[in-house]
Length: 377
Image 1 (cartoon, rainbow, N blue to C red):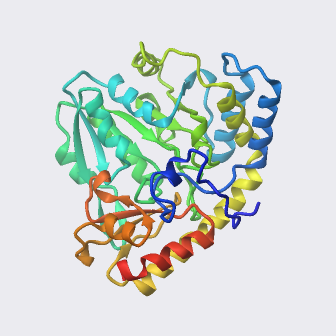
Image 2: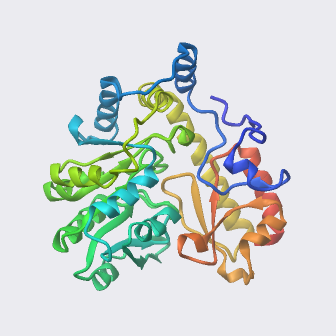
């Protein structure tokens, strides 16, 4: 696979490339600029050539592809009935909020966090409780002590990102075990967004939150998707793994009235199954390429931008820059003036930070860094 190939995306209806003027390089939304695996393209072409695009049902072959993938990649054996299919990962966050407690109850999360986490509780008439993470010895930490101080009898759920977007942390088995114990002691539903779990760049394992203990499995809604790993977010496909029958019933019931149509559609089914069954070689090459981009970015920041702090990216293709010491009134606008679009840390709950998407050809990343040189040095 040629990840260096620059594919023209303007004029294709791309959210990433058409939000800003044509002379701006977009390194913001979590959408890679690489062609998806050949197996995905072939599967979608076959569906197109069939010519009939009616309502679809999830075939047994997709269920088995998901089960095999989770077992092979993460040692997680799941039963078919645990699966709940979704039109995307973001709706799963709102369903989890609705499945836990009642209007007026609290939903906790660790910040900074992917913006849809921050709006999901309010959409479901829940109150958001945020607990900030902090850097200790150059690494973002899970703020368990602060979480203990923030939890109340009205807290009903914890929305969790694992691996973390935007911090790039792969939470360890010990951290996940402590987190599940925290949820057990306070009787919280744990909604664990694990859609970046196959984008780990360091030699560390991903430990699904539902696997650390029987109690963890009983209270966890794990949200997953091949969308980020295989660059197919536009196919609108995700699923939740919910082992506990009662929690699964509540999660399904939470969508009554607005998520009852037949989904996923044929193209989502075909693309997801092809990615899981035939994307292995492409995936390995992708991780290699992303490691190179990460190392380029981290090295550039260390050498050229001494007042910008970046923590090591263990997973995802997203880096989190602390630019508070630069004294910029509007860091995002300053970057836009240099013709580079980055994500605003304020949307993640932390002003003064920028998120960089390095899931792009190396030439694009290099040019973006060149343009930003006078802004962030």
